[in-house]
Image (cartoon, rainbow, N blue to C red; front, side):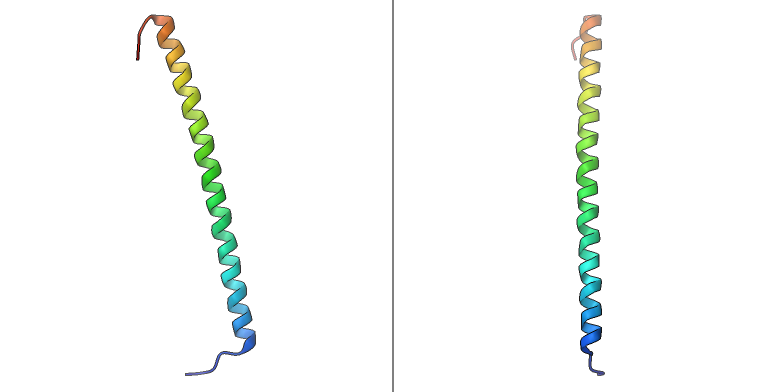
Amino acid sequence: MPEITDLQIQQRMEQFSAAGATCDLTRQHHENLARAYGKIISVVERDRSKAASRRGVRS
């Protein structure tokens, strides 16, 4: 089995670090989307509830 050089180790460490940063950014993006979706849903539900109460319908 060929030996791994210090340069190869350093390159692999940089690749793993970059991959980890990409995962962190993806997770943050997902959390932001989930928060935004939750806000949209709450506004839609609120508006739906207001419309129903104006019509005299309970949900």
